[in-house]
Figure 1 (tube, one colour):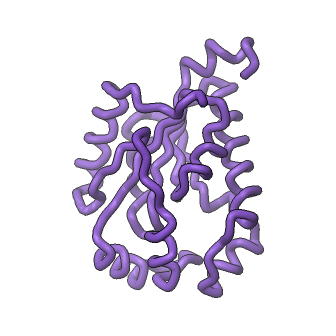
Figure 2: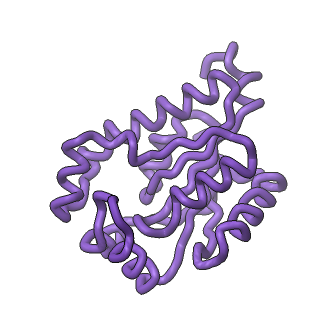
Length: 181
């Protein structure tokens, strides 16, 4: 990391709200950003048209599909940190290797994962409108998720306000950040 950015990076933080499609990443992420007075970054907005079309067809993205998307999101994280702007990002970040790409060598990035029952996720995915990813990819996403010690896992079947307050409390008292390794 460039030492001239050290003080600005320490002053800013990015929290990534992760999880499988339908868990509430965008809803909770927007509400958390508003609550904290931070910027909100919608990770889905960074997908290529080819990735979106693939998911619309019910095909899971592979690591080669995801890599440019994750690198774009990493660049967006750096953009915010370089400017001293804290942000909340909604991004699935299901594998530890994806989280490593997102973090790079930054320590000011934290992960919160929303979880709920497969039944609730399926119901949410089959009733939501206007999103490119449907319920047919739910099982592959659930199988892809890798937990790790550096994330907060929280039940998303609570009220959004409760989730936001819990996450904000965790951020206030947590040292849970990306490892520097």
